[in-house]
Image (cartoon, rainbow, N blue to C red; front, side, top):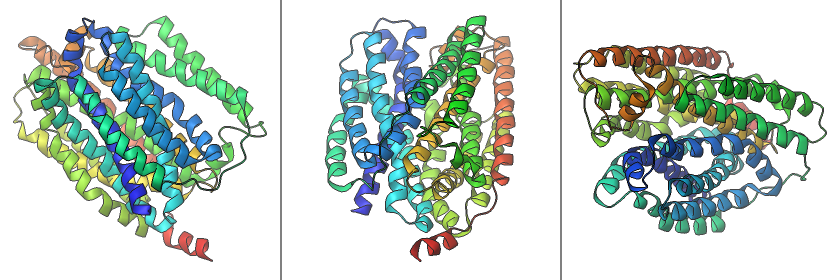
Length: 472
């Protein structure tokens, strides 16, 4: 049963990975078929990131109270339903709404998957288990590039969503049969905490998303500042709440809190690199979206192969060394990308993707297992939700940074069209756009430096010792 449960969790992450990359490739066709503007259909991506970023912490806490297995399986059903409805969309607004439904299901899965792994695997085996969950995401992202491009080109973008339906039905049945609820916490409400956290994350994420589409202005800055102010208020009331949504005491664990922050800065710094490199390959080198993405596949494949072994390493020696080494390799990959010019041989893209892929395979399972190994029992859902919330907010910010900084030398609409493969830049403008791309990569490198400092500062842990304590 334990293996089947892990298989269902890996399958869920794979499905969310497929839709993330496949939809990016399909956006030009979606824009044309739904007779929409690019500034509207870009919300097909942003809405998905926004809902997942906002909801994961709350849904992790609900999983602690109502049962993580129940919440995870419900997420699979909702994600599958949202996929089916998204494929039937005839207007852009419909598709954006159904992507929100899909994201809500994805948030239920993301918020509770890490907690379920922590429930069913002992502390000294979780690294390997999280290595397999990393395979789910990287395999899904790879399949999204390969299958997404083929489906969009030869069948139609709708089938990117329809393909989830039969897989989702089978996985939901397996999940209901094999993922059972652990002992639940007594359920208590914290309405002020829920509303303040919800308002804070919505304002911050919405303001950041608007900056991507329309640039920095007073309104967007006001949204973000207001969101930060409400977040400070949320922390204040949670410290005094009898039954808080997020028990601030869990952050007293040095390894836990620094691992969460390392995940946040890794997402912010490295996930933007994918966007930046795709803009380079499509806008400067003239590759199609599919061909540009194919050059990144080797890194995903290597990450999938190495992740379980890297996770097993973290079980033996702790997370500090493999996670920090992984971040350092991501930085090395970014340095290779920073050296690119308008004539750099394309095989250097493959080399950089392999270096970065090896880095992610070391970082993700080690860092995720560090979070869950140091989370208090009974708070696995909340801890998993916090991890995903920080990572998803980092992902959203990385997208904002990639588009905003890369477009400092060209009009914003040109950067959008380059990212979607609708516009190639030649001549003098190409050199100017390279300056913007290189500036965005420098920013990513600096953010990864912060992640390395946090990772190395988390302290050393002994998984074997913890496992013995649990048995005795």
